[in-house]
Image (cartoon, rainbow, N blue to C red):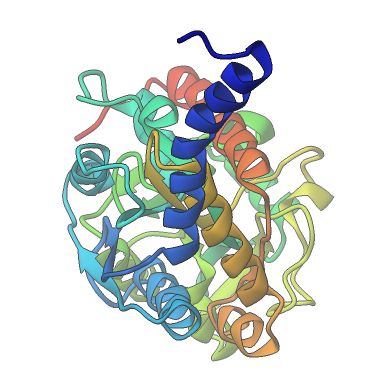
Length: 325
């Protein structure tokens, strides 16, 4: 029996619509079981805290646990690889930050391509780094530090949490743009670097605001500048680096990614819920405690940020000839 053309087209359209309808229904029901948020650092740091803040919000809004899984190692590459290999079903997410974009150039033989294999879901927070000086340093401003560095090249030691860390890269960017030379002293983590800065074994550091702001407030360390384009609400009297080095802008940021091919409807649902969190005064106040401000972007906008950051740090890594430890 031959079907009339109109009936045939109706049946064909219905058949095509079935998978779409099924995906839509699946996204509406999502999540139906616990979701993992994989963090590439140990518990207690700002990335871990940010994950727990947003994970608790999503748990309360969506009715399923969002479990934080800390998988430190290889500069967050261990965590990223575990998510790349996970099923793209929305039940495994990744906390992403500057390390994710730095590692794309810093490491030659990764088993994944970050921009290809991780889908951007949502951004969370932007935080400045602080340009810190030991209290014994005579320079009290960025111009004074630049003048001293040029007059005494190789005399200023710069601590970081390790080769390729955010603070290291921000310091290298400053060196390139200000035309100065610091002696980089890498440590195995932000804690030891900060301890030696406090003790006077090193002179300056670019460090995350969350872990260093109390030392600034107590007067143990001097904040010469913050690295974001705008001043930080947490330190409103501290100038930006760009007030003295035009065009300088860098900082920490956090967001969430997922394995590529995660259904767009699930990505959009997560993005919408996170955007709602970033509009909630309790969440923004919690992020302010970390020295940051809410950063609400669409998946496409967050993807552009990731691509721009990858390109930016690639140029710094190549210019400074940085190699992983």
